[in-house]
Image (cartoon, rainbow, N blue to C red; front, side, top):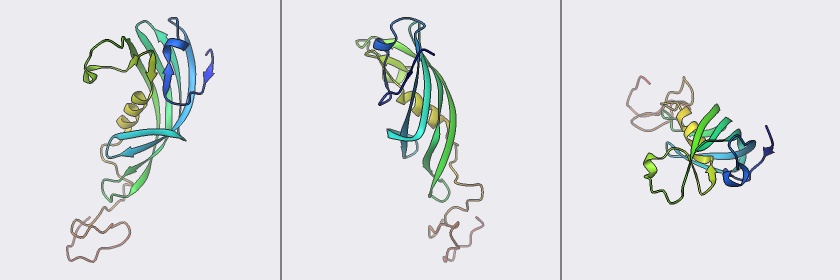
Length: 166
């Protein structure tokens, strides 16, 4: 690796740092990731999610390889309480170089370098979201909530008349 860099955000200036095919650098950083709703991730300054990637200039784009790990807070689908989700993920993606004047639908785009800048956030966001379990459960023994009164059955029995076999 040629060099280690610690960017202040997730924007990497490809035009400035990667002039020739084969140029590569290692970048390290960290972020705080907050989940809103099911898959709306917001990245801010912090250190709960460290990452490192090697970016290499290739013909027509860049290669992004590395790892991202950490923990984020999710909501349990059974009891609706917050729980900590831990992950360790490998990143292996490519981003294409594109002209800023190219008119393409955002729905059809792959990861891209736009205006000479690579934004790592979509790459990290997709990797993290794809790692989420289909059903987000705080533990296998989670009893959920009473469908009648809404009491969290993990913290005690409900006092409603509905008898459930949860």
